[in-house]
Length: 121
Image 1: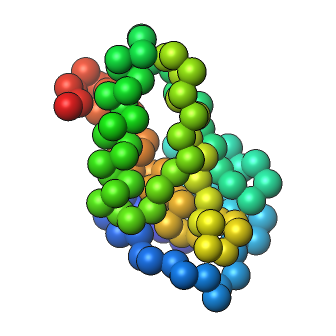
Image 2: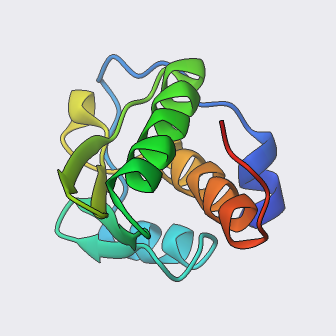
Image 3: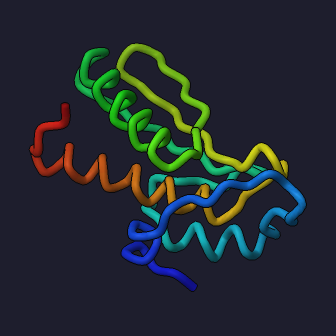
């Protein structure tokens, strides 16, 4: 089972379908390897984030967008002023794959930088 550090060093791999999504048991095991912010909801994982204001939320979203583009794996993003919800699942298989947990772990890295006072672009 990969740990948080392992997940952050991995790269998402293209998924065109043809593989089974993780079972609930596999999903729970993988969820234990990412930050406590993430929740298993059906065949997806999601996380809610709150920021000082809209601008800070948008900086976070832009950083997530850059990461998602680099990984080739894109979350569903919902914004309400200073609140952001991210939802991850592998659309091609209709459920969760390792890619979702890799991206979740890397998104946690963005949050850790923010919380440590490191400036995001």
